[in-house]
Image (cartoon, rainbow, N blue to C red; front, side):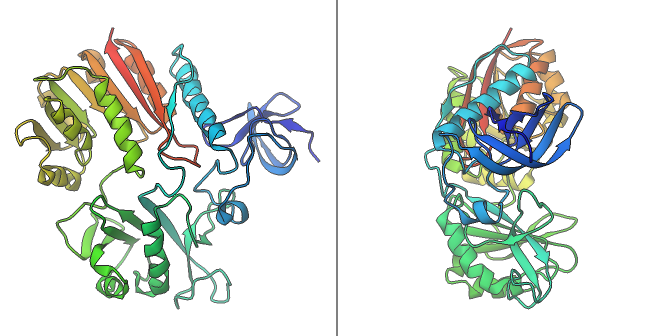
Length: 422
């Protein structure tokens, strides 16, 4: 039996943080600040350790009962913070961002303010499910005739899959689709490994099946079997190659393009970022990693001359068809940002919204070598944001930072940092 450990905070991955008797930090999932716990399965590293929660001896006032049965009984890894009150979740995320900026970014800054989520539940417009073959006699296997379980991964057994009944953070419309679809799993590709359900802004629902081998031949049969199949688009993603529509309209929303899983909160974050750039009338603004043009639309609405760059050709094609701006104020380019920067007109301001890996080194070099007056950086990863801000600090200073809770019940947090040329 371990000694009592006091949990003092929440780490970036969502686990509670305490100290072992030897002084090493220990990370314990499903614990709350203020808990006193016993742990088991301690895995020691040189300067820290990981452990499994054995017993909550004294619960924190921040601890609540998680409403999702999968979170409690299946140890679902999709959420990390359902056992915390919402106020405690917000405090944890502020601290995660602040710690990253101070420790990695070497920036003397307080924990930022955070914008609360519009909805704490049912906000996700996308869910990705795993498929795993099981024995025919396995009671958890879905009765699809192929011995497969379709669901999510437990956080403590990531190679396993438990069958999904309901995801409490996913939009009701996608869960309604899932309740129908799981009765027809036999119509998915035989070697399907991943199934993504996505809701677009026009109300259509998308089913994206990933599999090696032959194309998805039963997609139209699946679409016909669904009660509202006319509002469903089926995509097939081969092991190597681009995803394509195999049933339903082909000219609609690109289900493979990047978009925030919480569109409403994503809009608030982008709007705040653009507002921090000030008066943009007649100014050239770069929108790097611009996706389907949401930020470009906001910038064009402020009378800026926008150049929006994204590597996803389908996203760029959709942005062009949307009619963002007046047809002259926005120029869309399908390319890697780092490849086209030398050919772009000199900007007055830049908005960048890179993937979790952060800015490409060549983008950082361009922004530091030729500083722009104002830069708004939208990030989904506090660690890579802090790293990039440290690199940019050569020629920029941080003037504003704000967190946005796009992902309630999880440890993820969106952050917007605003920089000025020093």
